[in-house]
Image (cartoon, rainbow, N blue to C red; front, side, top):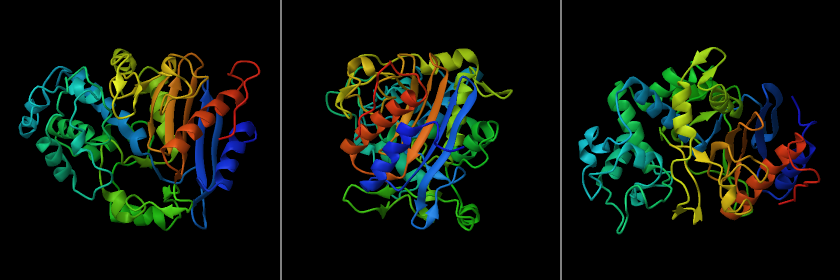
Length: 378
């Protein structure tokens, strides 16, 4: 399915490509149950065409998967939101973090951002140890002070899921979420054999660093080694149309094509605003949160809110985005499921505007925007 129904969106992709901000993209859009766009544009990497089945790295658009895992464990009665993380990982009870709970992790009100690392090659066990050793930030009030964590809190959620299920996080994600939802090409860690099998079929897509004006492979993710590392909050890999199935499941109140992953009440629990009206010290903006999921925060400035769902999204929209690359969301008021990724990390300022105008263009191309709305160039 091509971009013929989405001329404004395509124009933005072409403008960004001409500016050197990205060289390829994948988009999936479903409106009220009807597939509107399942398309690929440009190159996945130099000389290799982007396809709809190309595996891409979702970065933090991966985070709702761990939230789904916690939801499943809540349903089974294996944990509670107010349970301390240290009950599951005793080594975490140090540096003032003894009282931090599962809910604090999910709402980014936990305050050990010093343990966040940007694409270190530490093993999962080493990253968990780093998170356990990190101190609580000075003056931080757990549950009240807000600051998005890039990775460390999600390593702890992954550790809790692994402890209670007896499976490594990447194994649990495949067996309990990806395979049941028909996401056969989605992974949190790809071993050498699987990586090579995709690679020989030209199905491995790269992210690229483009903020310097050059399109260069990302030094961490664009390699067999990078694809092999499991980061519960960052290393989801797969075609973007498969990530969209997570939101199709949410749209179905926990069920997609007859497969139930969550109960309706758990979907409501995860996606209901939980952290409301708090200034986020990482994003330097007020952002509302559910449990591991961003809820629409346009009320605090649709033109400035970071990693949102565009100016035309309804107040009920929720989802998650990935650093300078991707976005996935469901807008219940419009019956809209959307997921997209561009393969150039062009810098925060460029990408935040790019994401806003792309999401605006999607609504306008679908006829869901106010009459007369016109997407700006970025």
